[in-house]
Each structure stands twice: as structure tokens, then as C-alpha cells.
Amino acid sequence: MTTDILSFILILSVFLFGAVEIWSSTVIILMVYTLGLAWIIRKEYTRFKPSGAEKLLYATGAAFAVYTIIQVLPLPASLLEFISPNAFDLRSFYSLDGSKDFMYISVHPYKTRLELLRVLAFLTVLFISMQAFKDMDNVTRTLKILVVFGFCLAVFGILQKVTWNGKIYWLRELTFPSSNPFGPFVNRNHFAGFIGMLIPLGLGLLLTARERPKKILFGFLTLIMALSVFFSLSRGGIIGFFLGVALFSILIIRSRAHTRRVWVIGIFLVFLTAYLLYLGIDPIVDRFYNSDVSTNDRLIVWSATLDAFKDFWLMGSGLGTFMDIFPLYSPVGIQAVFVHAHNDYIEFMLEIGAIGIILLVTFISLSIYIMAKSGPGENRGILRIAAISSVFTMMIHSFVDFNLHILSNALLFFAIFGMAIALSTAENPGISNTRVKKRKLISGMKERTPRD
Image (cartoon, rainbow, N blue to C red):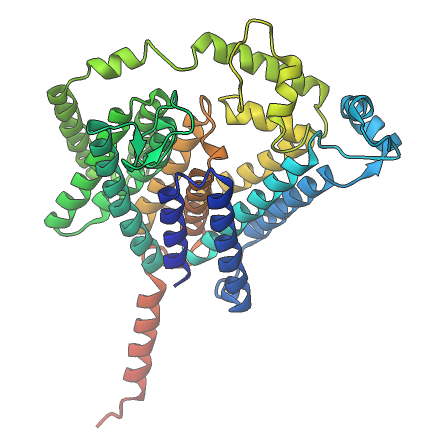
């Protein structure tokens, strides 16, 4: 039930234009909080006993949330001057109310409070996924829902592009006519980021399907999703797709138990190549030579952001404050207004500082430790590899874009991240909890059966 509601929230967030507007993000975040509250009230978190590493993950995530809260707490001005001199200088210079006794680490506390609400929503989805997806029944059902939805989303995106009339859903006018929408997303890169995470999951279902008709079905659904990434002409999405599939193949080969199934991935890529050659690859090639944001501009923005990081290196400028800080460091040659750095990692560095970076690196390191420690398993092992490859795809794409600042994409990312951890920590690899219960029930019935 919990995972079905989570799937509904993820799908609804996409329909609401990626949940990037205030009204839509508010609806989605409230739904996530409601799901988390129900999860706590029903004590579903008690179904599985977390390991020591999992407890550390929970603690690290909670510590990051507390750290974000500290960024918006009023601190004595003398303390702020000591831990973040540049933030102190900015707040002193721009102070309008004349109050200089207490100041915030964040240069824009209101935006950081909004980001805190998002962080809490991400952690809620992550922790629920780490628990709920230990049940293989929940995993397979959720993956099927997401992959079928991904196929429908891909078809819709392609049809809308072919029949484009300048409006999303053929009804909604664009706020910024210069944007490049695809499907319900205002930016094609965000569509590619979302679909890119679903493609490894589709490959996982393809490899774990027993019957040939199901293999053909999941292969077709995943093929159409992959085609839509190329149709979107998102360079980051295309690069992320290739590297994600490459990691998926490498991990399958390294697992040994599943090496014989790699040929299925080869056939998938052959069909994809044939489709692309038939439909024409000239627009894709041209796309790599033309960009809305030139490579040179990106490098300049990244360099300026790193310069800003040097001035806020310890505590950061506050989550969500990139747009407030960047104009102070923007070179004269930059004409465009940058809301994001087009690199999630550099932007996070500026906003959370060294302490936040340490917390994130600790969290990622613990996650890698848990995933690496897990054995190959059977179907569970393949789906675990699929989830890891999905997370990796988004992490690659985030080097050249800001997908993790799009609510729908970030929620899916943390849901799959939690799934990867859950599949790595389950006590009964390859066997669903429901099946285990059935076996115990049957065993108990046999023991109670009277003997002649």
C-alpha cells in the first residue's frame, strides 16, 4: 500500500509539469509528508530491523537536516563573523532593519527554509524506500508501474514534439517561450533525466522476466523510453544513458551468476541503433554542436561558483541561495541570468559548504559500502544492479544540469536510491517476504497435520 501511494505521488509530480511551480510543489510535498506520517503512525518502520550501517545512514541524513536548520537559525553576530566572515559582511552591508545582534548563515533565509522542506521530503521518501523495498513484491510491482508509466510518458513526449503547437499538453502556454519543453517538462533535459533513471529499471525487468512474452514486452517498453531520450536531444541525457547502460552491463558481468544474460543487453542496443539509423541521427549529431548554454559559458559559471565557494567554504551560503550569490561573482562577459549552475555538485558545494559536503560524502560512502557488501543473489541481485545503474545515470547527468533541483526528478532519485539500499540489505535475497510467509504457513500446517 505504501509503495503504491509513493508511485502515485511520483507519477503525479510529473504530470504537474515536474512539480516546479509553487502550487504543484506544495501539493506534492504535502502528500509526501502525509505518507510519511501514515508510515510512522502505522509503525511500518518496525517491520525490518535496520543494520548498523543503515542506522548510520539514518543518523547522517538527520544530521544533514539539522545542519540545514542551523543555516536559518539566528546566531550571534560575533559567532557568524567567526564561522562565515563573508556572510557577516553581506548581512551587515545589506541590513535594512539595523539589527546586527543576530544574523543568519544563509544569505537568503526564506529560500533556505523552502529548501529545508524539500530536504525533509527527500529524506522521507528515502527512508520509506529503504524499508518498504526490502519486500520483493513491492519492488517488482513498483518497477512495473514506473516502467509502464515511463513508456506512456515517452510516447506522449514524442507525439507532442511531432505535433507541437507551442503549448504543453497542447493547452498550457509557455511562461518562457525560449524554453525547450518535452512531454510535461518545461525543459527537455529534465524529461531526459527522469526517463534516464527508468531505463536501467526496464532493463532489470527485462533480464528477470521468465516468460518470453514478458521479455519482449519489457524490452519494447524500455526501447521506446531510450528512443525518447534521443528524441529529446538532451546531450546530458544521452551521455547519461550510455554510461548508465555501460555500468549496468559491467556489474552484470562482474556478478558472474548473471553473465549469460548480457547478450540480451546487446540485442537491446542493436535494436536501438537500428531505430536511430532508420529515423535519422543528424539532429542528434547537430545537437552536440549546438547548445542553449554554451560549453564556454558553463565553464565560466562553474569557475565563478568555485570562486564564491572559497568565500563561503565552511558553512556555505545557504541552500537555495545560488541565484543570490552568483551575480556578485559573475564575470562581465556573462549576459544570461543563471538560476542554477548547470552542475548540481558545484552548486551544492557553494550552498552547503565543507560541513555539508562531509555529511553528503559520509552518506554516499556508507551507501556504497552497503551496496558493495551485498551478494549477487538471483532476481534481487539484478534489480539491485538496475537501481544502482539508475542512480548512477542521474549522478552523471547532474554534472551538466540541475535535475536534482526539479522536484519530480529528485523524488524519483531518492526513491530509487532507497530501493538500491533496500535490495542490498534484505535478509532473504531472491525470495519475497510474502513467499517466505506462505512457506512458513504451509510448513506449520504440515506440522499440525495428524499422522496415521
